[in-house]
Image 1: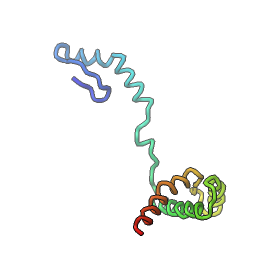
Image 2: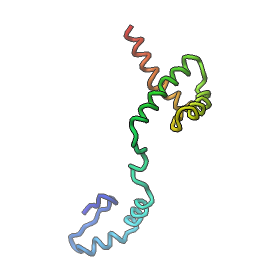
Image 3: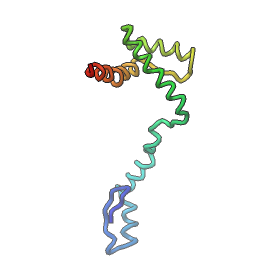
Image 4: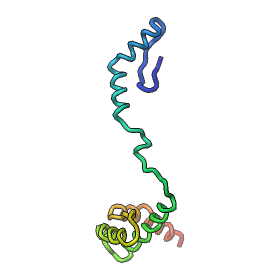
Length: 120
């Protein structure tokens, strides 16, 4: 018999219920129980999306801010300061430091710009 949760294999041909009881007392099964109890669910690692419209508005604001940063040759580090000013003026959830700005430029804006240039 193979247990899916703990990946344990044992036979119940001879002992039946006794074999299952012995398996439940093994060190491997007890380690599985401790590990399962101490680890969080995979779902707990992801952010819950409750207000999609607000998140879309924030995402739409981040793109132009990244474009503005590279268009005026600002450093990505300057976005940490700018983000704090914008957060105080407009919205509490706006968080846009250099790492996020750099990621948007490198992963979104740059590939889009190159694809547009290749069309010419």
